[in-house]
Image (cartoon, rainbow, N blue to C red; front, side, top):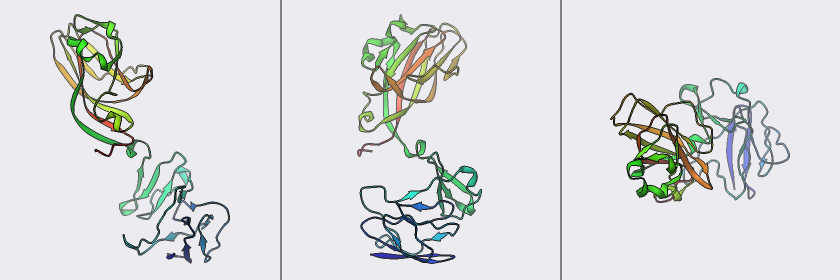
Amino acid sequence: MSTDETSSTTRRVVLRTGVAAGVGVGAAALVGTPADAAPGAAVIGGQVNDAGTAETLLVGGASANPTLALGGTSPMLRLSPTPENAIPAELPTGSLAVTPVADLVIGGRSGRRAYVNTSRWANRTVALPPVRLVDTRALASYSANVLAGADGVVSGRLQAGRTLHLTVGRVPGASDGVAVGAYLNVTVANTVSGGVLTAFQAGVTMPETSSLNWWGPNQILSNLVEVPLGPYDRDPAAFAVHVRAATAVIVDVSALILTRPGRGY
């Protein structure tokens, strides 16, 4: 099986020999494994196509008969990493390159350079029916979600300087993928004085930042917080909540960020 590709400097033929061929495209060469293909020569599957400075443009094709089809179980197409400062500020629309840190660079509209981050933007945010993880006013009802810090709750309030470690691991949907983050609605109630609440990833040093502030007694305030998840006591989907003044704390989860969303979503 073969398909044509045209170039501004040469015409090549991609031959399928059980694996896909590598094809030079723009700023980043597409590579396979050993050997080079000279300009004008056939590109054999499993070999390197070093296009040098020449650009190669794939044209034609359809969904039923694509110009370039990849198949197999091993990596079929490799973009050779290109240093960030070597990628032109403007790329021809539709061209591709990849940086050494694995960000995919795309020639966007009007040649503007655009990025597809292969970690953050490869994830999927899945909205959930809101689930209450904890309410310190009725802590025993949520003990399954509390990993540590329950002794810091006195008379329904998390005491000043104390931290609760919580998990979303029992939330429906969390087990269908790898949860790396969560959207939380964090509420304080029955405050006794002004204070600060910080929600942060488990397993890291608490940042000197604020997720929610209040300024006096007997207040009820809430905020939507996106928090990364981390491991705590063998639970991989944990986060922490710290307060600097005593208050009741209520935490609801409304969405999860999954690296491998389950089929049900």
